[in-house]
Length: 206
Image (cartoon, rainbow, N blue to C red; front, side, top):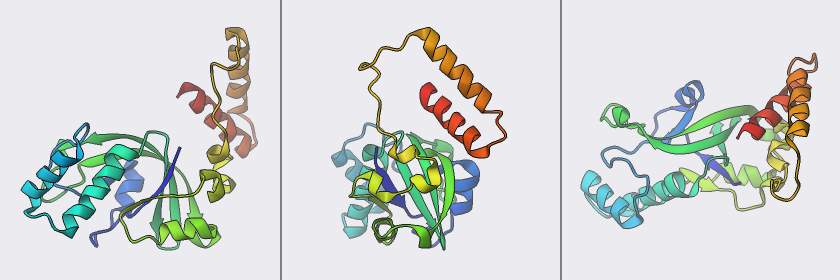
């Protein structure tokens, strides 16, 4: 899994409220159509057709498309800065909303987001502060994700090592018993226990 920062208002228009309310993030790019399974050369050709020339702005847009459409993956994490706050989310797959590909909208290239928490920017460590300070619309965190130390706000979700489902055999009865324990924990009086149980169940389903 990887961690990215993304700007909510790179064009001077504040989209943060819409992203948070509707559970998605988007790059504002009109008139180029669905970019899923489209190679870099064709993306540039569509950008030139839509915007007119191969200048530095288009090359920057090409890099944004590369990161947003092709490199980001379902299950990666996103940080979106909002003044003194950073919003942490779990990314979903890329999809194209053709109804939003209009001059008045433009938020047609989207990824769903499950927003996990809000973090005071001042409490983030230096590596994450540097990530959020990058001028590009989207930037990938260049350190191991554990070094971001975001587990303080995400119940260890970001630092849980991947488990190989083929390395250990667990019978159906044991799985069913474990799920029953988690279901009971969902009704615990302890908020953190309920949250951990919910995360564990969602990870199992996923």
